[in-house]
Length: 267
Image (tube, rainbow, N blue to C red; front, top):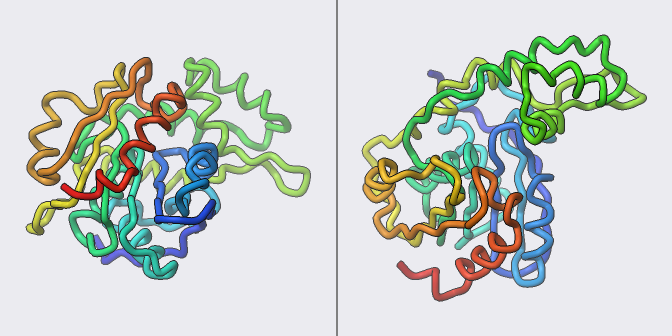
């Protein structure tokens, strides 16, 4: 694999105060975190980021965690951000862990949401195939896409979430906002383990937040997490699955604010 070339990530800023940077998951974007960012903006300077091949950030053929974490590192340098709390959900959590293990100088605290550093079963091929096979030339309304994808993606919430990436405007033909071919080509890297290398563990405060009904942070994951993030603490959000920030937003925000308090910045 060639050395990654960084792309200039799109981002949004909210509020003022100690910096908090948020990385979304697969098929997501910074927009999914606007409500969390606005909630925190009374005390913090929150930066929500579109990772490469997502949202309004540039498309690139390479789509692995070395590339994603380098993009974020370059953005932190560009914005002159130091002593940040870096938050990442799912794929964004793996990008955040990769950065913490490879270039931790600007990170004071790590908060990872419902993911571990190891490999997971690839549950995305059917979604990617359904999205790729959707004939966009025959789509004029989002309802058309909803109907055509219903048999392939039966879960209403997942179907609606993926279709956030379908752009339908009067000025251009329907198109996918995400770089679907690059994601499809790299899906085994995305669900795979993060690159560990021979670097030292991340010894600064690390918090892993899991959804009560999710299996993404199981007992089997804890040993690997402890190896690389020895000071980690585990928090569970009740009545939620893989998207605790959306499925139980009240409890999630309450616990997130607690983790952002200054006394959590010392391991």
